[in-house]
Image (cartoon, rainbow, N blue to C red; front, side, top):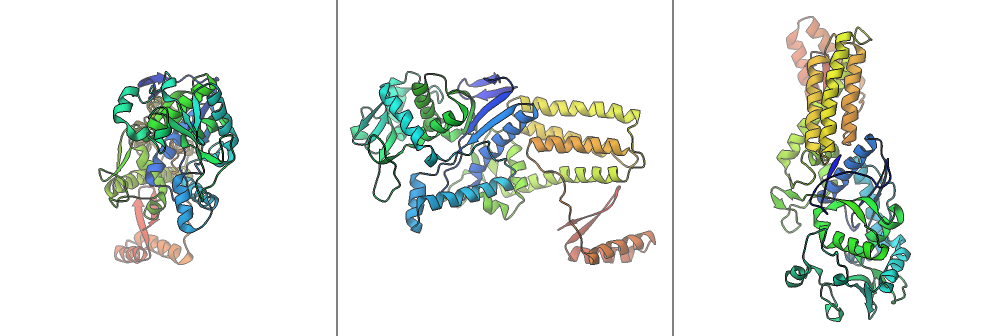
Length: 468
């Protein structure tokens, strides 16, 4: 299996630190509002990575944090006249609801920054002792130039940063030894939450939070660190600097970053009026459609979101769901139970499609090609698992599609819906009319059912229905 490593700028063969186990840290959201669809992309793609590792037999320790102390959380709390804890707990709960709707599995651990302050203070103390950090009037800064490897993830040169990269500059820069030094601890302001530290009451800088949580729950060196490409610099670069200068060992062996999400070919922003939360999208679509859409492109590629592309994703996902439903019908109505010799040969051919799915995922988690393999399975089913095949054959083909879809986190089994007795009676009446060749009456009943929100589909496997 090969993964594109931002650190080396190439696809590297994946070799875990401990055989059979994967340690993986994914930067989670800052919880001050409902998560937006930009937040959803790393959640979905790295949840899919985790699922594939588990499919390959790895035991995955998957850690994804909640940043529950931040300027935006404080601002929201002040606006509403409530505590920062009330804001963060509210939106953690809402985030968990959205993750469930997208079929994103809970992490092995979801640490909260505010519960890890002691570890942050300890790491900062170590950095000061080693000469990598210093305190000025209650603020602790990291000495960027003292870290000889600084810039190795973003492939940025320190002198270039000095001249053109004011993104590293923070308030209080006049008291810093160097404009490129960044904050590890900042003193409290009136009305803000704070913690007691050796440098006075205050709170941690953002970057130190992830370094500490990764270390506590995964160890000093981890297999994979992942997140959006917007985090490469300065967040992930600073995490590496802090962690490696403190611990004296490599921080993460593989760095994975997903590409940006655009809306109608423009960057998503509230000012442009093209900002969507996952909750808003969920009002228009089943969030399985959003998940499917996110996986139709390679995770490192930029992805454009639009109503047209979502409609296309919805239709494509329905094709898979309908194929699985058809296979269920064929299995339940098959005359023969056991596999024939010819069907055994077909199942061997089917494994070639499964192999192409695995090859796609082994090639830097290429979900677009993996989805293409699932559609190859659907075509295989539509050609071979038809009326007259055995129940065992239809069942095995169906199980294979469900299994591969589940690796991508896609639910492709139709939810069982119960029709009320009036609709069931009308469907039976229409079937009787068709049998009696009274097609006018059959069409009339079909129209009546459509008015009631039930569309009938006459397939070679028999009559089916769906809500419209």
